[in-house]
Length: 92
Image 1 (cartoon, helix red, strand yellow):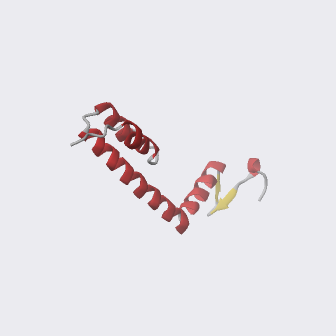
Image 2 (cartoon, rainbow, N blue to C red):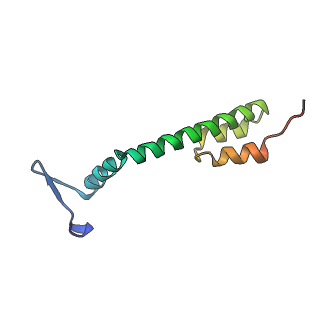
Image 3 (cartoon, helix red, strand yellow):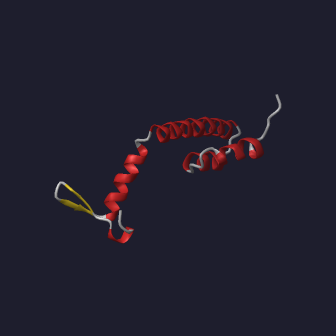
């Protein structure tokens, strides 16, 4: 293909802009089975940590942490930090 400045794709008599072409490339990338598998694993990983962290935040009565963990998605990083460093370990 030519340089990025001059990329034009003609499909069904329509000239596509560079942004439209990039969107098509992204959609094709998403259709890759390995990408779908990776996103599925990442989603399960995130939900497991988020659920555990939210449960601990509620159990400890920590509303600021609950809201932060609920709103911000960090792929499990913030949740792991809360669970291991900030959640109180209550003795029975």
